[in-house]
Length: 165
Image: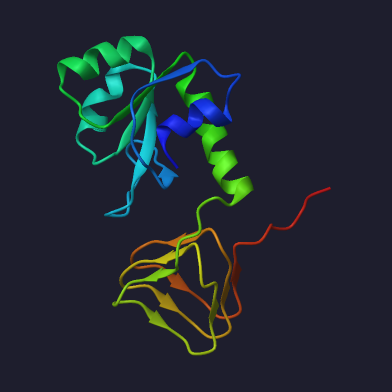
């Protein structure tokens, strides 16, 4: 998806693309990012700029005030200006998720140890280094298992949990 697609998909939203870029998923500042992924994030306050500039993020949705500072910092990534950057970012997230516009092949790090009886979706799963997946585990789409995790026997990941009444 591109930032310029936002203007087309969310016509009712007040947004203006200053510099276009491609992205695969959203990213929250300060959260772990998978190397090589093209991401977009948001900034509503200048206090988060230093954290943002230290991360390798392809594009940002921000307010006019934040954009003025980004220009001074010579940020060269994609920029979309919105009065409600956080709301717009989550609308993009929901659009990507609901429409399943992005289908990535499953990525399994070489250092992961996976049981032969485990079942892992062929797309939209990321398994990082030093992960251990034991017997009879099922991993469905839209799952990321972080470095060093251990998934014990007979676990299903990627389904709705139990409901409370």
